[in-house]
Image 1 (cartoon, rainbow, N blue to C red):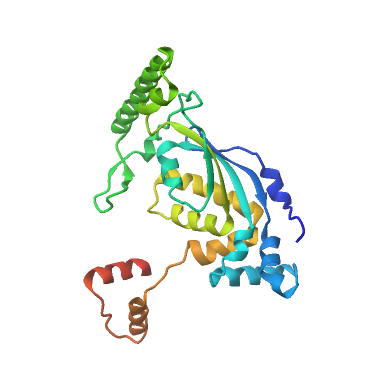
Image 2: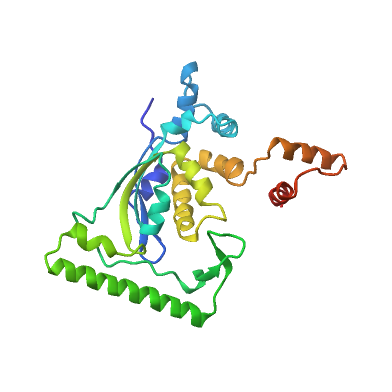
Length: 273
């Protein structure tokens, strides 16, 4: 296989894309592109890249039918600066290689995330892990931001006092807040990256990690435009129906009554919206 270079991807290498108030994401390196995907898929036939139309058709076929191994031939390395609570959600995806800054070796920077006023909301009443869509009144958001800022300032003051006392960094760091920014290198193949993006671009994902996923999707499109377009069409906006749901759809098309349990019917109807 030939070494794959994408001119649009080369333009964004090491370019820092700002995310949230103090975070960023950079594409450090990549291996392969759309061409590599089709090369890997056709290797058993001894055929490489063909026309754009044929390559696009093949990539769409592979993704639609979950033939994932050719997408694993494309690899990305990102440098990410994100709040710790975002990073902890991030590393739940265990199909990547990660190397994070260590508070045992380094003195941590006084960089803490403070949400913008329009992202501060009350707890959702129907989503145990999320916030409401409406932001709180301005006076409330200002009070919340003041509390968060004061807390991080007080915590870092204590942290620096412990360091000045000569206390070990691994002990001094233990009270640092989840809002503190951390940095890490993250390497992942395209198949698993698409899985990450499908979950983290979902409307139910927390806004802060969704903001990183949106930027990352744009970066991936520079490296693999055909595959990214197929992902948006076939996976990102797609819905999977169960066997019983498919039976219900067939019944609806015939004008028949849909027979599903109450909760099952609620989920089914939400998919149809």
